[in-house]
Length: 608
Image 1 (cartoon, helix red, strand yellow):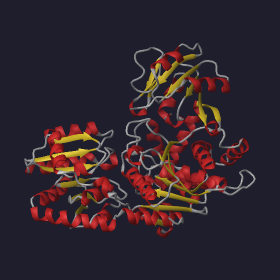
Image 2 (cartoon, one colour):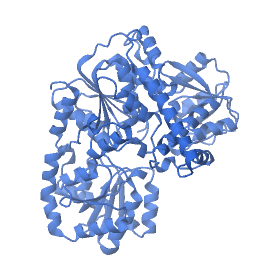
Image 3 (cartoon, rainbow, N blue to C red):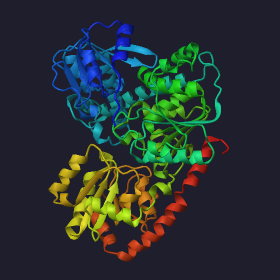
Image 4 (cartoon, one colour):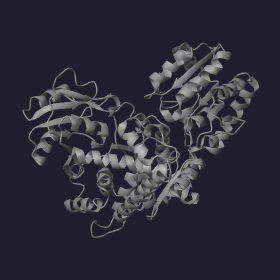
């Protein structure tokens, strides 16, 4: 169930701290109906902007668009918008629409108190950051992800200014912009990370205390490996384990794997956002010193890293183990600034410039962090190691390789009765062949290619059924494409499953069509149950199979070639039987959980 927040108390606090008169309050997270009515009854509240589905038909209430991609502002609006929640929710599009409607300022909470910014200032900052993204990556002649391609007039102007292939002048503009941005970022981040004992007391860590950090415990491969790691550490006698998440229970599935950790005395906590949350744990002098130290970072980075720094200063871990790029950088900077002795930054994919979440500080941030004592960057595939190394312009040897470890208990085959009941629930006859997959329905997974390849098989094998496990923003596109290709009646999309062994057990072949991958868990899990894999040549996928024996990699992104490979597998009973014997042995040898935990503890430098 999605949790709600109390907006009244922070509104009153902000009003007093900033001496606000008339405001419009933006609340991206769900609130109770009585809280909405309480705010609307306040004479200083001109209007509200609420989460999608909470606005109703009230003329003083606007709403965030689904996925927080934009907002619909109410007709009556104040010159100041007070944001109760993460101010990063404010997009360029939101700021532009607010400015057009007469909004002059945005107020929001930081870790050290309330802050006010002009809307025009925020827009310029976002514009410069987007220009930096394009310039940096265009200067290296790298392919931008689809999410960064032109979608509006501003983006088209930026692309023209930095467009490659438009002659020497434009390439010079891109290169000069890139060098200027990166030099400034590296210098400011490196200066902020430099040790200064005058600003903070000497760090006294708690031996064997390990704090792991991720954005959430959502349904995904990185989160599965994170929970595997924590469970494996607990089994080795580490009893001071904490997982900090930026968000838990705020959006659907953000705590999907929490149930796995519930019985193992592993603390799972949401990141505390303000210094006021640490009363009794931190002295005022410590908080003030931390604020001064963080102020050396660029403002937007300082605000984002501050909650992590407060947590580490209060908890004093011996090890901070961060997962995934944005969290790696924020938690890594915070851990260096607070003096954590051992810092592990876990990349889980190819380099971030290939994805929509890329930000211009990422390369500079990683390069600055890797110069700090005690910091280790790792990746779960050799392809990922080499991609990060090329992007960061460092030797691959500076990045540790730590392959995934499979928790076989979480991927065990179901009983015959469970297997039969699951097929029955999905409406799949006992004699039907099944091609399936498990992934998030996002662009980088290329689910439309998956559907087109499956349609190729379905045209030849009329008994074929298709099973897609997952959720995501492309679900309706998948269903529409399946209908266009005439296979909608054969496609089953039941959502997510806590235990992957159940859906995998009914698959005769597993298909993955990603554009980019780290070391995909689902490919390993499919083989652990003897399911043959067909996949595109993406990232570390090749490393996850015993090629031409348990898995087949198709080099071209061609639905017919993918479909033909699947047809070869489905028509060869003896081949599938060999895979059922060989694949589980291969997975046990290369991707055992004990091996992963051994290597993790070695990276920590702690004796288990």
